[in-house]
Every structure is written in C-alpha cells, then in structure tokens.
Image 1: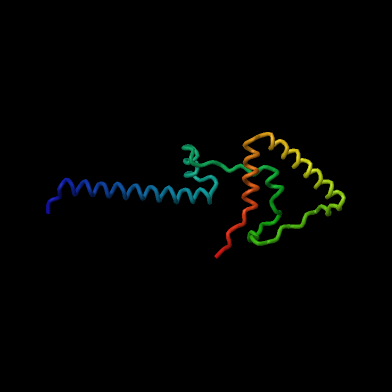
Image 2: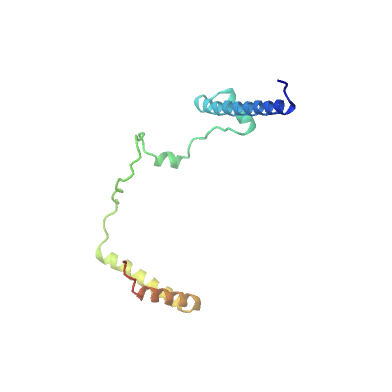
Length: 136
C-alpha cells in the first residue's frame, strides 16, 4: 500500500511528540538526580540556564526557633503551652479595663463628630437589638 504525504506527516508528528515526551521525561528524571547529587552535570547545566540554584542556609532566627531534634510528626491537636507569665492581680486588671473604657469613650466621641460613622454605629446597634428569627 503506497504511503501518502498525509500518512508520512502524521508519522513525523507522532515521532516529534514522542521525542518531546521523552525529552520531558529525561529532564524530569534529571531534576530528581539533581536532588540526590550535589555536583551533577545536569544540575550544573540547569544552573547555567537559570532553572536551578543552590539553597542558602536558613537565617539564624529560623535555626534558633526550630526544635533541636527532628520531629517524626507535626502535632495537630496538641493544646498550646501555658504562658510563662503569672496571672494579673485584680487591681492591675481593673486598671487596664478602666484604661480601655476611657479609650472607648474617647473614640465614641470622635465617631459622633463624623456623621457616616455615627450612622453606621446606629445601624449596628439597631441590628443588634432586633430579635433573631427562630430556627425552624
């Protein structure tokens, strides 16, 4: 059966795509080799073209905050550690609350002087006073 020009061009296209896929697979395997060997010729070629770099060591603050031993797992549902500071005494806590209340009153006075903020605050208070519909 004689080959037509279409059949030949289709074969060439398939061959070209196969070569392209083989080249992609080769480059992927080369990148895996780069991870395993430091002075690999493929990695050096990738460096020349800007596709690979050497990873610098982490900064000191990162190295200091990491745990000393390698963890086998990352704890997900572990409770957070307790704070190292002692609890505040009631008089100190009341002083902080009164400072916060004074700042809140000052900010409310500033908001009242700005009409859009006063309107938004009134709408928010009205929304809070509305009874929520009962879930059915």
